[in-house]
Length: 466
Image 1 (cartoon, rainbow, N blue to C red):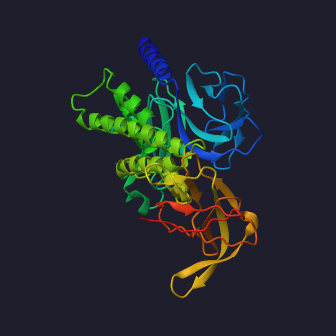
Image 2: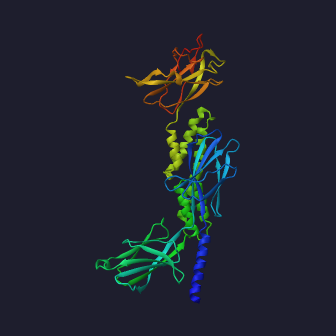
Image 3: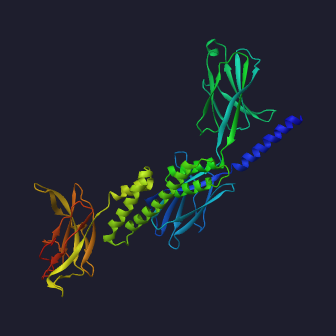
């Protein structure tokens, strides 16, 4: 009785340690910030996606988070429509209902933006430490054999290689859990089969196949499975690798850093240290790439600087993709860049008036009209511009120094874009001799456009590229 009680106490101690050490860890990682939210004025959208439908998500400023809705792929979506007229710096609190672990996620978001985050809830992973054959026994049933799998862990995933049902687990008098597999041994062929089982610590884990061997009628075979909790170091390294795969480089670096503070850190950690350095570098590259991308896409950025910022952003993306080829944000930015307009810049000067240095005076407020034309085939150049779609004109004006920088969409199979330069507003029905059809180059800097005002406010002259 005392021996049995001792084993029960041991089991209770094991389970208590297990439950305390398996407290869930919540990780939140950014998945996408490239989408646009077309809601009401001063609103933005934040989605949290998780396999867990029992999350409690709140926003400190009081923006409500909707109840989880199924996405159809086994996950759930928690949506917050945020009012950002007064505050763009938001903080979300994410926890499991009834749990003590809470993760805070800061979010800077502006009107019309739409961010998606992934929320994962994980505990320490259990792993199969050892599987071994122990005692044989007699099964008092004709033409029947049994395999008894014993373990202190009650969440094993066990399958028989020949398809027999696995029963259990059932708590035994010895204080362990027992799983039972029953085999039909009535045919001679059944006694020649090499039996095996597959064992995993959970249904999500890769199983370990273990050979039992041949069984005979009325025979029983005991199998002991020893399950160990993942060490602090291994756990954090696994989380770091997961974040790295998801391109959450900062989170990966922090997980590696946590791993190196574990008492269970092994002597040889060279590989993990190199990976920590890599994700730290990728995190820094991500910050720079995003910074230049945000500058390039900011509507207040001067047009003649936009392409510079795009190029800087692209240089950082290239470096990130060399080490992390599946980076979601990099690929999204690359795709968005395919639709970027060409930037045509230059200056407009007065052909008839010179300044003290002998240069043509700049014209402030000259009209540069972006015209849309139907594409027309040309025997010599391949194509030229045909009929103008007048209602699609866009008008730009030169600054005080006579300079301009204009975003010109890329030509299509049906449409060609043309720039016309005039002193006054371009009037329908008049043709203007100062016409420029941009090439396919991303940036094009023209020489001075020389105009002379006349009674009709139309320019006469040409583009001087010297």
